[in-house]
Image 1 (cartoon, rainbow, N blue to C red):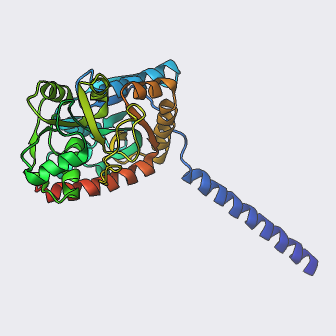
Image 2: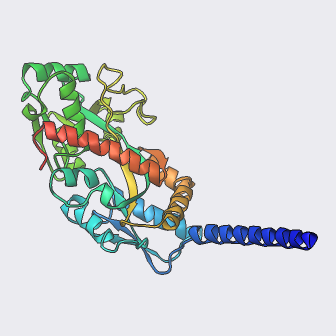
Image 3: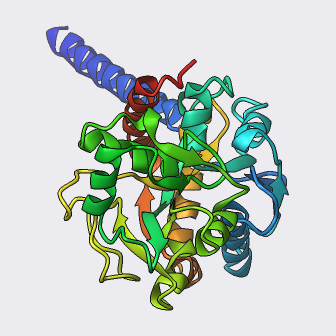
Length: 334
């Protein structure tokens, strides 16, 4: 009897252990999400008109995915308005839907801080940061301002003595560049003579025409004129020199710790699942490592950068905090 009871006890314990293991395996299988992929047309949303930098990025992604047969059913949708706010709102309309992704710039942060949009990066799902553009300060070749120190010396004497175009809007990366440089020499950024035009191209036209003294904008707009001797880039807001203009020193090299990231990111609607995020991380990583993408960046003088979803969220959060402080100091927050 004792032997029989012992056998029954051993068998019961074995059966119980099998059941526990099966339950555990079932639990893991339940918690692990299956891979996700699009079930209908994917929209790459752009907050600017066709032909601009954001539109070009979207259409390059579309071409890469279609040519590699990774994603055939994909289209670019232009939603122009509100400095990108309309595009972000359109993308975020349906929570948990990963069939729309939007090309995002720093306006995603500043629009919210300035009170122009209820949406912020935290209300959506950052998928990846895919590029970084260099901000440059540019004057005419015949200008007496030859370095950043010449500029700041003029500001200290009279902040209104240099007229500077910020491109199309205040509260942008072009604005941050001159504001941080002014703060570095204890000049109130609010006292600077700042102007806006329809965009960087119009700013450069006015600079070459002698109507303004300086532009703050993307380096890609200035390279051709700098090399032709028509304009001089006096400094760039990056940690290292540009490969396209190796003769131009950074602002940091000139004694000013001013670095202004001008990133491009892809963002999805809020509440995307881990499986949806993983899908887009993989697609975007393959795209940014393609020769077509890298060639486009080189052509536009934009730096390669890739951060996955969580790293992108952290990156945007840090940039958001810095921008909020700076715009607050300039009295621009709502």
